[in-house]
Amino acid sequence: MPPDSAAPAAGPTAAPAATASELPPWSAPFAQVAFAGHNRPGDLGDVAAVRAGLDTAFERLKAAGLVRGRLLTGLAPGADTVAAEAWRAAGLGPIHAVYPFLDDPAQDPPPAQADSATWLDGAAAQQHGRNAHLAQTRWLIGAADLLVAVWTGRQARGAGGTADAVRLALEHGIPVLWVVPKDPHPPRLIRPEYLDEDFGFLEVVEELGFNRPPLAREATPEGLRAALSDLGLGERPASAGEDAAALDGGGARRKRGVAWLWRTYSVFRRVLGGKAAPFEARPPPDDLAAQEGFARLSRALDVADEQASRLGAVHRSHQVILLGVAILAALAGSASAPWPGAKLAMVAVELILAIGALLVWLDSERGERHRRWGDARRLAEDFRLERAAWALGISTTPQGGHVPGNRPTRQVRRLTGPPHGAFDAARVAAWGDWVIEELITGQVAYHREQATINGRISHRVHQLENVSFGLLLLVMVSYLAAAAALAGSGRDPPDWLAGLMLMAGAVVPAIGAAGLALEATLALGEQAQRSQVLSAQLASLTTDLEPSPVLERRQALAKAAIRLLRVQEDHWTEDAARRRLVRGG
Image (tube, rainbow, N blue to C red; front, top):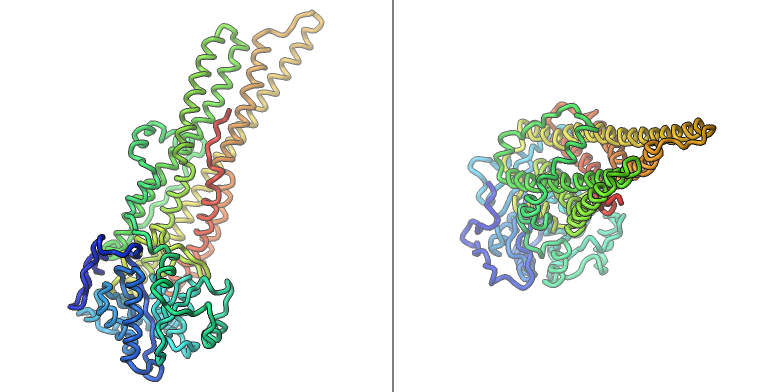
């Protein structure tokens, strides 16, 4: 298993972990550093010069504040082995190797230069027209915060080489620490934010050849510190439990105080929405669940998901209670019209309802529960996507995009390291099918359920509004008919009918306003439509899924699903402001 990030690296050159008092004022506690470099002697040149350049690069990373890290490398002969030696000498942490073929090198015993390793099935990839070394490069970049490259600066002469690693890193918002073979100058830093949004890599290569700023600058400790800081690596990662507690703002105390409110929305949902067809999620394969990285991400997901579910239940319940109170207050306030003798009692009831509603609203507003619910839900979904992506060695960062490195999900995944062991046909089939079910099949079932239930609730709330409005019309017509019938006798309609009309005139608009407020706050109809569209889009991804266990195909499907689910997350986050509670009067 990969060693824990807090454990010292193996080998006689490993340095002990720094204590808190020894850390520089700013530090990146832990980072995953991918390496790519040439293996052709003609490109690599003088090995001693390359080693000196790598020593300088790693020392400058330490000077910039990097305390510990994990080197991700293919450990191929040439620059890879030189980098592994330099990393060990710098005492920065463990090494994880990613090999493109199942038998390169033998898995038992594990490689001597690595603390842990992953083997990909390059032969299967080649049988399906994919390049094994490009698959290896994607795997390395998918988990990296920074790429160290020994690169001539020239375009690739074959797929999966050093130039492809640089291109993939820049496309995914990862800075590149560049050591140029046969060049006495210090290492350079390429920061992706300096590039145009739609940059062409061959144009970048030409510009690097002219060595024009700002694409490639000397990799000073200050420049590296700025690059790591922009990635969010200057903040110590909190555990998932600590982060969830921070989002909740001391939720244990509030949990006890509002526990009786939790089930209000679930009862409301069950009464108006009914039940959807049950879906039983497939448990992860035993060998996947046994991976320490998967277990750590699962624990973080469980904490975040429980937190989001509780905050959502409380917030939704508060909104249903407030709107129910508004309707009851309208009933109490108008009840004295048909029953004048109950006026004093109804005023007292209305006052109690108003005070209770004010306390519920103030508790939610002061705690910003609408925002914290949105944050907690986004965190849980990020963990869900990150865990599935981890199992297939892909990045959740969209191509051409950037996901901040200080997100708790990235921090937890960074500490876990990549999955280890051989991705043979059996593993790809088992893990790949579980990921597809987690990201596609399960999400299709979930969003179909959401579309069904939220659609029912929205429809039935509209039905309630229509029925109440119909009753109002009926009472008004009845009153006018009674008045017309009694006009000849000089009598007025009975007081109870007049009072009933006044009562309906107060209660029916309150019901209509409550329905509008419920839709504005919880967007049930809109969410039902989004869920219906998303479930159809996700279901369409599996129409051409090959039965053979091809890792690259499973990875492509997972990336497509993650893109769609990210859009749903973005909509959810954008709607946070409108989820503030409506008092209803």
